[in-house]
Length: 86
Image 1 (cartoon, one colour):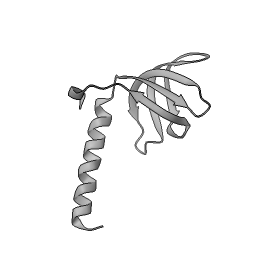
Image 2 (tube, rainbow, N blue to C red):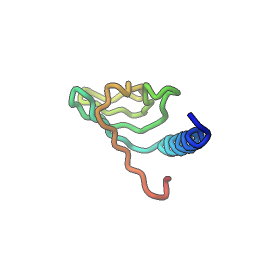
Image 3 (spheres, rainbow, N blue to C red):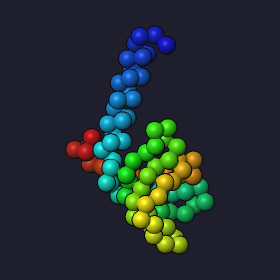
């Protein structure tokens, strides 16, 4: 990787981390690969982005106060954010 590519990768990583940090406390809806739909409040991601931490997870069988969802189980994740949030 040359210097330009490293600078671009660094810039994109910084922007990505900035967006992730601004998602904390936002309501989210996840469609899982078993086609179930769950709603929760986004808290954080693990360092390797293998899991997302959520609170107040509403599932088809009940509510959990806090949980980790494996990202490989998520088909899609919707989080409403406004332009000002970014």
